[in-house]
Image (cartoon, rainbow, N blue to C red; front, side, top):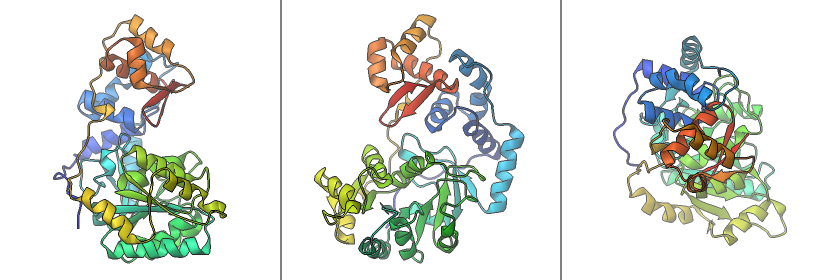
Length: 371
């Protein structure tokens, strides 16, 4: 059982260093990185243009561009830690993760890297899980592992750790919200060490990064993005697991939910997902039968908004018209293009300039707003 994907390329050392500099520079997120790389051809040319583009976007001063020395130091620290920084077109970058709009430009990978090439199923759920929920998560994970799948989760307390512990021998992937040396929660350092023998840990954060509240939703998009589908085992209303389910749906992944007691608030979110059309799961076979047809198809890199051309040669009138339409409330890029009555290439270029100036925020679903 395997996921088919194109033959991998390999970055030169110089390009890897420059890509690291680019993604570690101020106001460069994964989507902006992809747009810059596509437009300018390589990271070196994109780095050269950053100051000018930020100035055009109205930056108050020059933003910090990661230095060659800082990037080289990070690469050296990764090597000492046994970490590879892998680009989407390279081996050991999960094929499905590479297809999402905001795929990490460089993924920090540690452990048995070949496990990242196998088909993955995400299992996530309540940190404050019931005994029955923990037992079911472990059984489901073990059965999926026996069926040849890799279980991916977030190393959190509760359901996540139960799924990881059940698949230490068959291979499991932990997605970290912080750097590889800043494990959260700290009591799961032993679990992480155990799973690295047959599994792997991945993160988009640099070494030394302590996870903050806003880093967990970012981590969740990697959990869903790398997987064929996401199984929710116990999730209250307004839980992180439901964010993962929403991201999975936006990414075109299968969403599964395990039904629970209607009088247990920990099951309310999962039960709601089933009402909304998530596939009900009572055993591993429910998941396997749903994802088997998907695995028959090769993993393709779909067209993304980042793939569309940019046109930086617009006049000030167009730029002002686009900026006037933006405000603190998110608006879709498609609506912006229609209302501004200018080409998509111009709108995307102006948005990129505003983002590099630190004035624009991107939201899921192709929405943007002014900061």
